[in-house]
Length: 138
Ligand code: FES
Image (cartoon, rainbow, N blue to C red; front, side, top):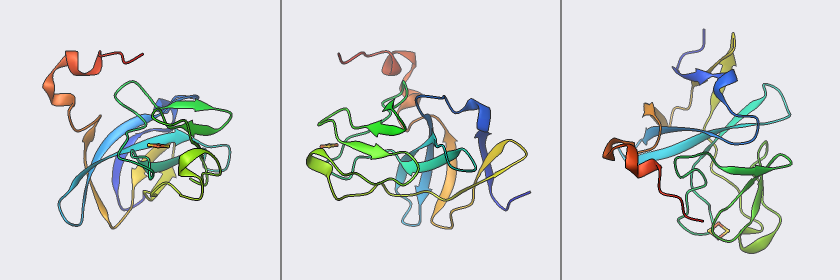
């Protein structure tokens, strides 16, 4: 079993969307991260839940928008490769998502990144109550 904290089952990662969890970095900053499906082995990748262009969350509690293996930034529409994290279009072109190192074993995803400590399932503001995740911003 990998040295790390279990985040979720691989099966819990939506086929088109993301699985949100929270971590703490080495400077005790709490950060959100997402597991997203990726065509390459082991079938899942993890990134910080923030667009590198501006401070914008991809997954705002109801899963990141995805299309054809790319994560769509909800603010300006840049597309990021879910496997590589690269962006070649829109205002975030040339930037990359910040990776979170994971390992997959026996169908479970583990956080194995020395830079992050697992905090909890879900986002950082999920404790505010059920209404915080039900705001639709369309
Ligand atoms: S904030 Fe994501 S592309 Fe601008």
